[in-house]
Length: 508
Image (tube, helix red, strand yellow):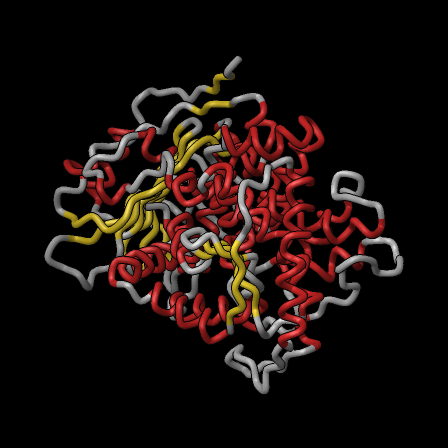
């Protein structure tokens, strides 16, 4: 399972059985900062700062937390129906039944989160994802992912819709003016659920690679389905949140596209009362805000090109399948279909290893990798040229303490883009390992200066404290192995780099 996708699945388990607008509150002040100054109307707050009513401890918990009154709770319960009608009109999704509502406390929410994440199967999956992400250098080696996620959820939760009980949960520690925009977001999920059955919809077409002894190229491609679908439902809900907040000004997201840019910037920066998020590794900030930021852009493009029906009901009926389609909506609109990746015979080639994890490395994952090691500009230049990718992680049989071995294969639009990505990955080695030495051949001087590398062709090997790293660039493909023995690497190179071409087809 793709560790990036799996991370969000586990994160969602705590707030998408629970579908929570955890980052919706971060965006509120940015929406209003970008909107014209006008007197507040209806139920919209002009100064939605969570820090107004809360004092945070270093652990992210609240001290002397102020609760909303019984009268305020009753008012908020009454507002649910009005906001639901707004969301229905904004999306075109019908109201089929009344949405149940419940007032809950922060401690009740956290108790549920901790119980969910402590389940044995989920804890094992989270541990696998954590180790693979650390191997790629996306998380610090001493980072405790589970502890971080629980603390972040406690800090960020701003209201949630429970798909199992069909209930929108209102929070007793957040001012009602701040909860109303979040309600617009969460009640959009209720409408999605009433028309499409979100719990089942999120699982359709999803592939559990753990259950497959020999995954296929199609299985790898399908590994991003849940991530793409999450971006659709959160993107739609963000559109409604923004439209609800702008309604008193007579504006909307479609009429004010600059709002989206300010909103996305606010999500990545966070607020002064969100220390867990502000101090998180770049990878986690990008990954956990992906469905909100890119989902919003995706939905905005569909609204512009196809109108309300295309952006909401039609997309829920025929959703995108990859992060590439979310990041580049035109590839979704024209029906782009990439040829499945060529895979090795994992059981045969890794006969001396115990399989640890396997999954896709999609366009968004590549964007984060390049951003972390070469910067945002390089990432935006390179990631649109991604055409496929996957990894396979394993450990030598009988040696559970051995470093995690890794195979990572990617495909690109051209040999030039493949060489550019290989160079960036090679440069990352010096940041990920303490000791990196190129393996020289025939007494030659080092052929690669990792400080000035812009393009990398051919095959290169480096030795690190965790074993060899091999980067092999052939035409539009890049094969990378880390901590893998030489015979296995050579077998993989022979198997995967026989003549093969990637193609792109367009559905009529």
